[in-house]
Every structure is written in structure tokens, then in C-alpha cells.
Image 1 (tube, rainbow, N blue to C red):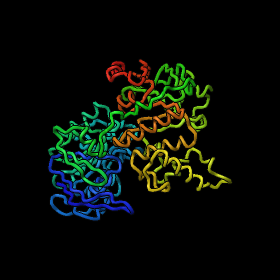
Image 2 (cartoon, helix red, strand yellow):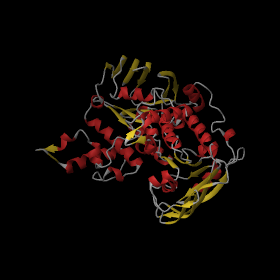
Image 3 (cartoon, one colour):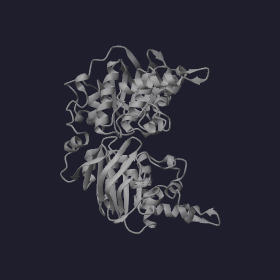
Image 4 (spheres, rainbow, N blue to C red):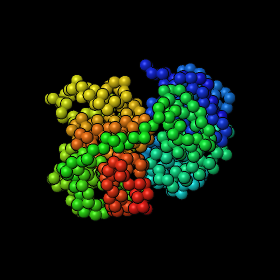
Length: 500
């Protein structure tokens, strides 16, 4: 259905794709893995028409093709479900599903909404999603929006002849295990009329769902692995070009925390989110909040930063009771927040690396209403070197960096401004194994510098490996505390016992 033959893609100073050979057959699920910066995103963008290749051939159903834009790709049966989601929150579900193709419902210049709703219901039935087509999309859960994305792609069935090729970009990054299994069940059902390209950093899921797996490194295909019988460790080795260290979480660098309490909550509650939460975060401590999705950990973090206001209880930061709950006050108190939705709440895409790094401290770099660009760049260069951020320069667009490097830019924004209370909400979500190691190194460095770190990890292994202390949350309440001294860490079973 789709084939790349020696495909090349070059940007100024960067050869992003180097002679890529890649194919997808009818009904296949093809996995695509590699470190951030390996070329996955570029390859996907060439497939769906956002980029045009400048060497080699792209064939769709054995015909050489070069898409000028994504719409041309869609009209040949190629659609994409985006990691960060392309839906417009303020529009209804049905408006999102038929965005750009509304003309079929127009008569005498007026959209016939009832006909659009009926058509949307048929599309939603394909993905087994029972929601009102008139519902505003922002009211849906992430998993429901993911299904709407897929329903939107499946509208192509009515416009093209033959099967579809559907690109799934990190579709499981914030889904629960149950939601992942439902998605995989749906993918298997749809294989009779669609092939899939599955991109994910979760190798166990790639192995589970894929027929074949392409491994990319530095813009080249370095291996093609059959999904059945594939081993995650071997794929990781091919991705990064080295063995993954057993000291993955840098446990040997874990040092005792200090007695100085940076954050203290006493009986803090927020109706419907968390209840009677008491905790202490000390200088140099990594404290993890673990629980199932929606247990209340994220809301606790957002309260400490000032985005939420508790209904009752007390919050102290550095010994002072918090009266004003706002992000501005949180920043003044030395709190830095790295949210899970880094592309929405973390960085400002379109602004440079140095502008993102100094965004929280612009007063420090201005005089008489004029920004001191030289001073900003100097600070940014220091942190680029310190955190080994891979960027062409501090003037580069931060939105164009890989996920792991974007995350380090966000952390640098707070650390360069002097924040010593760092809230990490899924800091390794959607980044590759090599970038995760780099972020773990940064966490250890911040801890050694005396930062108090409140962590919501991507996996239980990550929480156990990085933390001094783990608090297990269930239904908004802290159920159990665990000490995580090196060599005496709790097991996964210990945590899961109190989570469910």
C-alpha cells in the first residue's frame, strides 16, 4: 500500500532522512521506534504530506507520489491521529470530524446540522464511541478525544477507493491500561480495511500490536524486527547504539535529603479532587505521588503552584502560609511547574529557546521597557551547556526541538530563575529511552543542588527508582507512605496493593 525507496529529506545543515527503505502492506500494523531526533517525526510528515521528500521515491499502491500538502495525502487514503491531538476544543464533536469537508452538508449556503450529526454518529459508531455529536469537544476525556480523532480519519473511507493507511503518533501516551487495550482491540478490528503505522516510545506496546517494527537511528533504518518474539532490550540497544545501563535511574547518585521543609500541606482538601492531604517536601528530596489516573496527584501539584485553590486545610511554602493562590505567587515563592502537556502549558512554540528560558523572569532582563537580549542569550547558553540541550542555537524555535530537549528547556526556565521547588508532572512522557536517561540525570542534579522535587512519574518503576519517598494516592487520599532508600526500595506489588 505504501513504500519508501531510498527516501531523503534535508533541512539547512541537517540530513534528517538518509536513504530510508520502508513499506506497509494491506492490513499490517507497522511499528516505528527510535530516539528523539532519530527521524520518526520527519518520516511521518513526509508520509502525510506536511513535508516533501527531496530524494528517492514514495509509492502509494505502486504509483510514485509526492504530496504537496496533507489534504492531498488524505484524498489518497492517508490519515493521521496526532499525539498532541489536532481537534479544536471549542468546536462540537461533529464539526471536528468533518472539519474542512463541511460542503457536503451545505444547502443554499446553510449547514444542515441534523444531517451532519447523523453522519457523525455513523463515524463514531466505527470506533464504538457513544457521545452526542453536538457535545463541545473540550468536555471529552483525552481517551474520548483520541477516538474522535480516529473517527475523523475514518471519514476518508467515504472519499477514497480501497483501504486506508492510518498513522498513530504516540496514541497511548496518556491512556490507562484499560484504554490502551480498548484502542488495540479497535485497531485489530479495523485491519480488514486499514493498515496502521504505530509510533510509540512504549516498546512493550509496539511489540504487542505490530507485525513488523522499523528501528530508526540518526535518520536511517538500522533494523527491521518481526513483532512476534521481539525483545525490548535488543530494540533499545539498536535505538541508542549502546546497552541500557542497569543504573537507569541513577540510584547511585541518590543522596539523603535535608531537614529543611520547603512545602507543607496540612489537611488540604479540594472537593471532588483530593481530601485531607498532609505532606512535607524537604530540601533535596524527590517525593513521588503515585496512583491511577484521576487519583488526585495532578490537582495537588496544581494547588501548590497556585492553579487551584483548596476548599480547606493549610499550605505552607518555606514556612509561610499561602494566602494567595496564583501562578504568579507560586513563582515568587520559588515554585516551578513542568506540566504533562508540555506543548500546551510548558513551552511557547514559535518562540526561541532563549525566550522560553527567560519567560518567567522577564523583569530581570529588561531595562526601561527594552529587553536585554544579550543577557538572555548568555543565560540560555549556560543552561544549554549545563543540561546538554541539543539545539542548533539558543535562537532556534523551541517548538522544533525533540520532546526530551523541550522538556529540558522547560526545566531550565525555572532553574535559571532560581526556583528550588520543582513540580514534575510526567516529565518523561513521550520521550525516548535515551532522553529519559538525560532527564533522570537532571533530576539527580537538581536534588543535589538542594531542590525539593514533587514527581508524578510515567511508570511505577520510574517513581520507585528516582524517589526518596513515595506517597500512594487512591480516590484523592494518601493511603500509604514508602521510604525509598537505595538498596531497600519498595516493589511494584507494594505500591499496587494500595492503589487499587
